[in-house]
Image 1 (cartoon, helix red, strand yellow):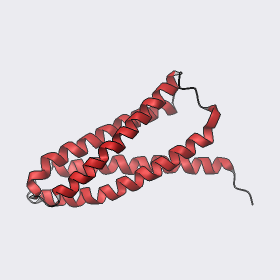
Image 2 (cartoon, rainbow, N blue to C red):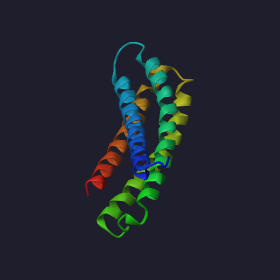
Image 3 (spheres, rainbow, N blue to C red):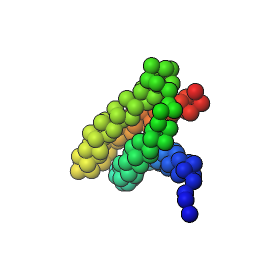
Length: 149
């Protein structure tokens, strides 16, 4: 029995969107928890952030693999980089690469904050995960523009 390539392409796109939802939703969750002012919330923020970092890097792996899969599926049917669509796609790739590069220090900062007094790290956590959420929001906006462009 042969697998319909359209079903495979649909599954790859679905996994891509699901991984983006995990990455963006998780960063918003960490930011929301970090914005709370409850006593002892710094410890909770660090725990939630540590869990998110695992999910983030797994999601980024899925996003990279499925992104490459999507490019392979569409291949030569994609508009050239010189077009408006191509320029938007290149901009999205730059944002994704930048997000990944900036996320390495974020993960390392979380490891360092885990050994510091928890309350001292809250402002840093808010900035780190606010930036991550903002970057994902821009990437998502570019992806929606590409999907409907």
